[in-house]
Amino acid sequence: MPYKINKSLRCLVSLLLPLALAACSTVPPQEVFIPPVYPAAPDEPRFIFERSLRYNTNIEPLTTAKKLRRYATGEVGNIKGLVKPYGVAVQDGRVYVTDTVQRAIIMFDTKNNQYKQFGSEMPGQLFKPVGIDISMQGEIFVADVSARHISVFDLTGNFLRYLGNKEMFRRPSGVSVSRDGSKIYVIDTGGVDNQHHQMLILDSQTGERLKTIGERGGGNGQFNLPLQISTAIDGSVYVVDKGNFRIQAFDADGNYKFSFGTLGRYPGQFFSPKGISTDVDGNIYVVDTAFGNVQIFNNKGELLMVIGQRGQNSAPGNYMLPAGIDVAEDGRVYIVDQFFRKVDVYRPISLQQNSTSE
Image (cartoon, rainbow, N blue to C red; front, side, top):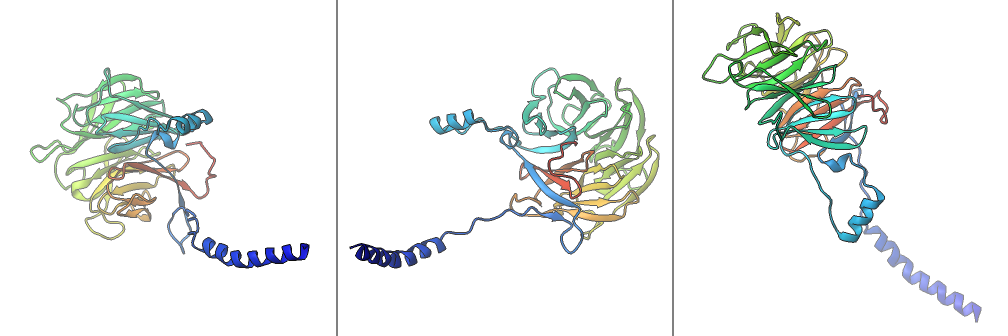
């Protein structure tokens, strides 16, 4: 009898095993996400995609209690996030993003896993926040293109003061703080009906106008629809001169130094430059909305490499309407895309992934 049972079992296995193997072969293999690196092979990689920030769920931990509640009730949670982001500024792991539709600043605190929104209520209510920068002293400066002034907040979102007014600005769209925090540089984009295409230097505490640089034109120190601005570690100030398809460099006092860039479709040229930032080595990062990428230059205006490409989906490295950019102290690069409603974060290859010293 045992022999008969084993023989029957072997027969059954011989019949079922091919069916089981066939069923297993129909299960698609699990895709493994490979983060993009830039530049691509065969060049030596410098940056690797790390994460995207879109919603509060990207950073707020899902505790066991929340998981059980969702399982029991079927709730999806209170999801909040970006609607139409524009500018970004980073300090000590906190990522601050201007949102022109929500009329607010969205904060992703990547160190403490917290999400916060501020600037939607008085005092300090925002109307169309665009440019943003953070001083070394911990104050957030926001260019409000509709309210036509600069709003200042502390790092937790408490309103501090206004700088400038409607008599001083036409369309303030970019702001950057000097390294010592004593001055701010404001870009007034102007318009087709006026000559207020200029950079203004203000006292960061009182808002007193210290100097006005430029007017509409194509000469050195002149602007045509300037947009964004960044202050480098050596005090140099770089301005996106969008309508002239170039970047202009000034010293800390607003004196013209040099410019680089021309209209074109090749690397090192511009078609629709928008955001700008600098790193601790003095390199210059320029967002081009038309190209859907970020071009990186040295402090002489020589092209070093490119991050990203234009894409039809929101996959890492793909951009449709890239806008703001910031480079943190640790070298991480933060790129905003308005269309895909995200902030992509890239980590230098040399930086450990668990480092949080932005």
